[in-house]
Length: 329
Image (cartoon, rainbow, N blue to C red; front, side, top):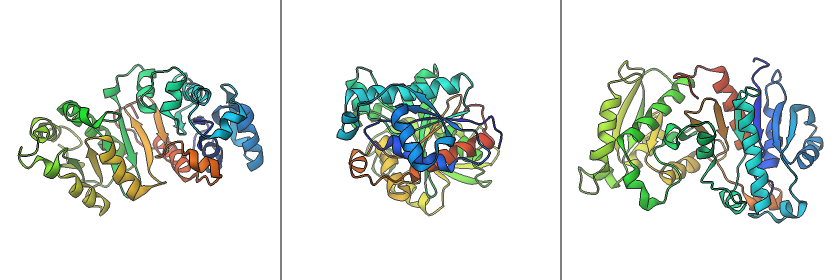
C-alpha cells in the first residue's frame, strides 16, 4: 500500500449517524495507510476519535461548528446542512488538489442542505458538477457481495423517468458498470444484464416503448465495442427487472443495469443491506459512500452500525490499488 493513497472523508450530517460511522470506520484503514483527512465539526469529531482511541488515524479539517442542540435534535436543520455541505466540499477540494487520492462520504440530508439555501439534489450530482462534469457523465452504482447494480437515472420523480431513458444513458451506465466489475477482477466471460423499465420488459411494445426505443438499441451498439466485443464480458437484455435481479442474486449475472433509482435500491438493500457501497463512476477520482441515509432515528438511540462506512473505506482502497480501466473511476 503506497503511503500516498490518502482518503478524504466527509463526516456527513452532524445530526445523523455520519460522524459516528466516519470515525469508527477509521479502524479499517490499512496499517500502512496515512491518516485520513476527516472533514466536519472538528471539536465533535476530536471527542469521538479520542473516545475510541483513533485520534492517530485522522487529520481533522474543521469546516465549522454545529451547535450541540442541533446535533442532539437529530432532525433536518439548516446549520447541520451547511456543515455537511462544507465537509463534502472540503473532501472534494482535497482530492482535486491532489492532497488526497479518493473521497469517502458519510450520508447527508438533501432537505437540510436545501434548508441552508443551496440547490442540492444529491452527492452524486454535486460531485460531478464540482468536477466540471455533467450529471450524465457519471453513474451511481451499488456494489455489494450479492448484487452489483448501476443506475441509468438517479434522483428524478418517477413520472419523469420514461422520457429520461435514452440510449446514450443506458450505454453510459452499462459501460461504467463494466469498468467497475473489471477493476474488481470479475471472471472472464461474466455477464451483465440490462433490465427493462416496464412490466415484462415492455412485452414487445404492449406496455411501453422504452425497451424498443432506447434499451435494445443501446445493447446492440455496446456489443460492438470492448469489453463485450472481445468476450471479456457478455451483455444480455433487455430483461424483465424481476428476472434480472433474481438471476443476479443467484450469480447468473455479475451485474444489473437498472433504469431508475428505486428499481436498483430496493433490490440492493434487500440483498446487501449494510454491505453494499454507493460508488460514483466517471469522476476523475475514486468516490465511495454508504448505501444508507442520515438515519436520525439510529443516531437518536445510539445504535449505530458502521459496517457500511467500513465497506466504503475498504472498497475505496481496492479501487485505488486495482486496475481502473478507462482512466476515470
